[in-house]
Image (cartoon, rainbow, N blue to C red; front, side, top):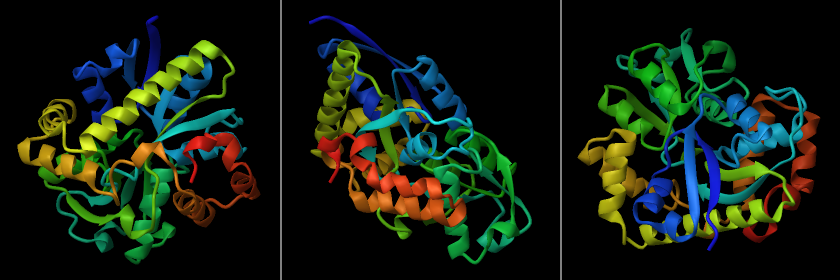
Length: 303
């Protein structure tokens, strides 16, 4: 089998990718995968467009923004598409800084976001809205990726932010408070694998091998076959203690927050993304999304 190289851009190091590397699944599929953490969603999609990344682990709202919304942070439309679904948010939650004991204490203070018009920012706005705060009741601080926001929250640089993928657990260990979860909003799609559209057969073959490995690894994890390896990975990769790593493992298995079976994406979760975007950044550009679902989400994973 010919070895193929993939460059992958991520926000928080995905445990599933680390497990696939540790257990030899990537090597067994003839893949050499180089993972790079990105600083923000605009930076991620700039690099994806430039060919610096073959694939990205990203929010599906980013794919919607950069494929359909003309006024996205890059100011241009990209032919991006989703080829696999990963999870339902991995514990995506509104978290409060040390000493901030309720959302009311966020009033007049900054909340941390990747960029103000991103999907996770919309989740923050919605959870604060449900807690009684409107968008005019707080300021925004553009802080970039989830690990960066977690660090900023722990030091009080922002009063609140949304965190996931183990960052919420590490922040809690630093004295922050988890207030509410995206699962309170409705079915949610947290992470997908996306790429620039391509007809190149070698690239498509590499992408297929990669999603096959991710699918098989998730199946093994959900079946309980990799518990020790997952916990070890979470401790080392995400800088969690033993209890936090076990909590992250349980989150991965939680149907409401964890892995998606077979990479499949349900339309109800996409509808939640669109509802949030329409509420906080309405634009007629979004009308095209539902008509184009089968064109920017691989049809074989769309329910």
